[in-house]
View 1: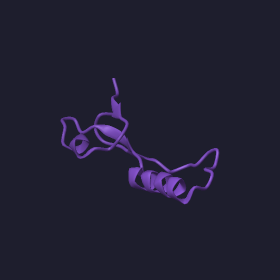
View 2: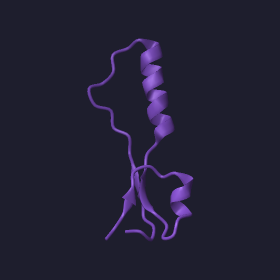
View 3: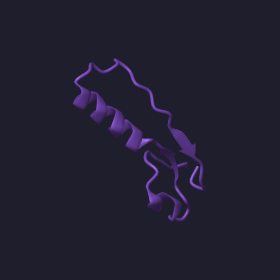
Amino acid sequence: VAVAGFDDIPLAGLTAPALTTASHPVGRIAAAAATALLDGRPSAPVTLFPSALVARASA
């Protein structure tokens, strides 16, 4: 059985076994959303932000 997390919180690397997880650029996503809202400009129908797999012992 393989287990994976969705967001790479600090605790994920400290568990036993260390949890494999996906890391997302939450700060960049929030900044882009806030900027679009405050600028009053229409947002793109799709905005992509790269995520990364953080492979650890659980998968």
